[in-house]
Image 1 (cartoon, rainbow, N blue to C red):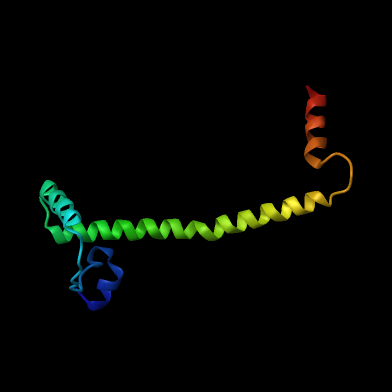
Image 2: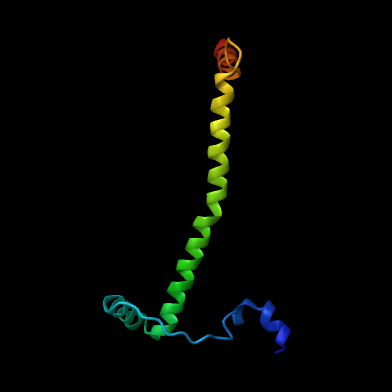
Length: 103
């Protein structure tokens, strides 16, 4: 296997590992240990999977925030424009009246 294939093949995504020491609360470690026993997997493997899932979920949540902000901005602009609209029926009201005419 070439070094270049390690970067392309997602199967080997975690080939290189970094050792890290972290302090976690005892009750959290007990939960982690219990889950690892349930799954018959090492504690570190379960911890890495849970960390990855949490980070992926965090990324999904952050990805939507710019879109939500843009939609809220567009709604504020639409409300502002509606206040300065000329008098008379709106386009929606005209379309609705036309639909009702056909019934």
